[in-house]
Length: 163
Image (cartoon, rainbow, N blue to C red; front, side):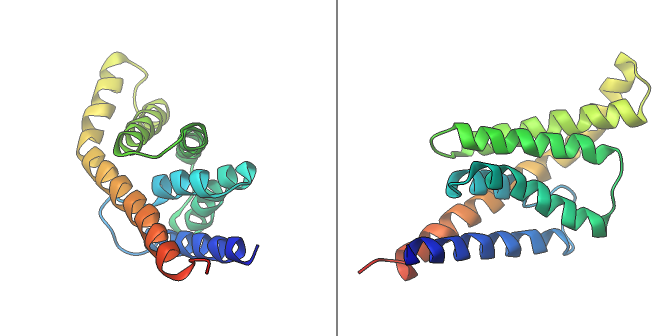
């Protein structure tokens, strides 16, 4: 039981550090939330907590960064990513890139619905203008997911070994 408590302390500490990076200067869309969603879904036994934690992290930082109608789509995308994380057996690079693609589609559909003409041309313009941000999304998702999973594994194997 003590080991599990220590593991949860490490998990939550890592998530808090990842969330803090969202408030530091960074390239657009290079953010930790996909990594947090997949990490929480994989490591936390209480699935409701695993689902709500990334959304809570997003909300807390959005109170500082700003909220708007687009956040409904962003939160929806991360909710879906959390559900994917709960359904799969193991997070892989393919899972991360698929999550990035899901976020790209859902968030940009929201941008189109809220800010562009609701025409095929508006849709094409919206998605075309979003393409440069997609590389940062994939890179951030891969980096943060790797740091969270491999960092936790290294800490667990080094400091949380049971005798």
